[in-house]
Length: 118
Image (tube, rainbow, N blue to C red):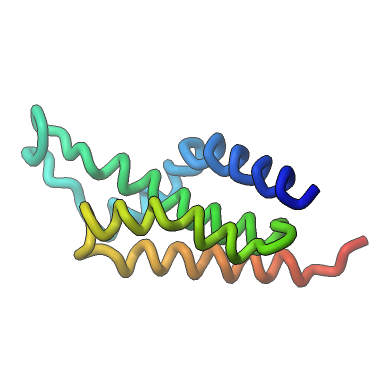
């Protein structure tokens, strides 16, 4: 039961991350303004992917900390490996931002998990 619930949580995260990317994207762009002339045909192509990875990182830590079952921290570690690979390969100079959104997601998830269940 816990494996199927964790897989459902993963599917939820993959579907919701693009929808919530707008909010983390505003934070990302406020820290790292987009250079309009950079990239392919004047578009900075790694920025949307960076925003998605940051949103994915925060959602994985938040949702698995709050509602994950059975080895939830193992699941979190495995699911964050692709995000870490992206950051190390494409965006190493901004790794602190991904760590920050991951820690904020974990703190919010920890707070939610400690709320009394009724």
